[in-house]
Length: 357
Ligand SMILES: [Zn+2]
Image 1: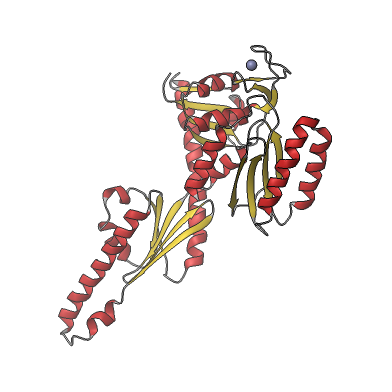
Image 2: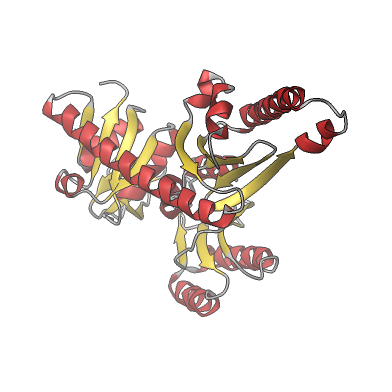
């Protein structure tokens, strides 16, 4: 799921209709509540769209309906353009606000925000003879790997002395923990939350490579039965971590600005930097939008209104400049943080830490 989402956002950020025609539909919906909204938006778009664009719109809606048939419930995001023979979708477990947008390129901002706010992580719950490794992405458990061993029964039958039995038992626990450590090693390139009862967690940590150890972001003391509580707590930890990261990114940007270092802010400067591939980390004010235009022919974006491109004369599309900045940033593999910091708002709603100047 995580790779899907990252790959999808990247792919979408590259797409646009080079003639600035409104040929892409981006749909974000909760299947349980979307129908009235959806039909109303379709009617409105049909009234507005000109005949040549309308034909593609109708065919694209048919393509979308075909996908929707397979999803009786849940949240789904669909990007489609019949004209470009393009359709992609992803079902998500996070609540979506219903949204239907017709534009010359896919509208990726809500998806980028989900990606920012729902960091993938690996959760491991362990004791001496039982372990469960959960892979969690975009608010949902993608995969569970369960490992167990029958330490007591395996070694009880020998009729050996207590001391010998204890020794064997210790060895068996160690072997089991090593097996789990190996599984975890293969499993995870994400942050890890380690949980379980008692001191076995420390024994387990000792068996991990430094690389895996460094990925542990929290350790939770919890009974092996409290899985539900643990999952809830883990999501909480991840959400707090995201907030902290976003706060730290703002602090970092402020430092760079004070030093007149590797930072820029404000729409004009950011647009220039992001098109140049200079942006390492982009900070965006959460709900800010600003009207501008794009010439898909020249790949020029500017704030304000212009029906035709002053550079090539082609027809332009009206855009949210922030969305365009986001698309450029995704194309150049920048990290993106959404923030509600007042300082970012006052610095022109966007800021960036640069790779080079
Ligand atoms: Zn142009």
